[in-house]
Length: 309
Ligand code: ASP
Image (cartoon, rainbow, N blue to C red; front, side, top):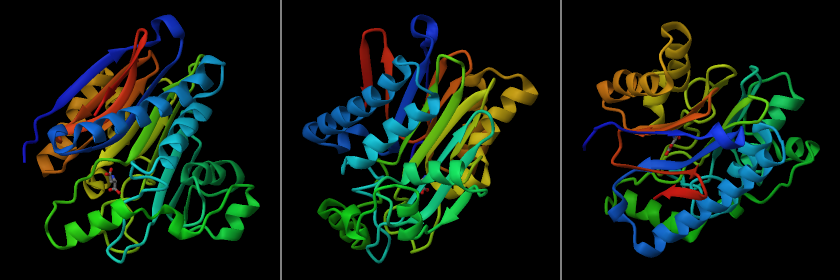
């Protein structure tokens, strides 16, 4: 499979004083989707973009904005996060999510089965516990946080069951579109990043990818950048990809696009890992980059919300 880097740089804070970028997974070529599917993904991304942007417009925090966008995508069964998550080899939905703010706060959950919105649970870990990562938070814990709980079956859709059967019967390569993420910089210059996923279709029960690993799939540091990743999680963990981007900025004084390009080259492409990331720096420059054939994303260009599907 091709591993050519595709990198898009967007400059966006000049007029608004804030910026937001979303992704919805990296994977195969866009032609693999029907026009109808493409339209639905695009509409879902646009609705999620508006949810986050409304927060930022009203002087809300980057944290509230990324959580609003990611929760919207989790509620949409098309995406591999929350309802409609990719299923494990035994047909379970095990959800991972993480959030980080640029002042060094972080929270994450792995193999979550009860919180309707995994991203809200990740935020509760950050705000209400001394921990960073909780595995399999109990229903009682989630209820105690004041969050909505659901039966584990809520997350499972027929489309994902069909996908699992097809992947197991080797009729379909494990297409990976659908993990979701958001990065925002608010009017006060605070940066936040959030990511949510069901993981890789047909993964072993209990497998955890990069999404809830701070520094691998999700990272933010004020003054530098926020990063949310998607792709073959093991490669992102081994390359500490999200942190590597900010380290290049911090220690080598690389600009965001150069840092992202170098990280993808050395930590992903060189090791035959596939995927991509979104990132925003403190100046409002946005980057969408991937070495997979395609990546779903959303950003604003003037009057228009642009969706890549
Ligand atoms: N990175 C996610 C994982 O490895 C999957 C994805 O982004 O598609 O769990």
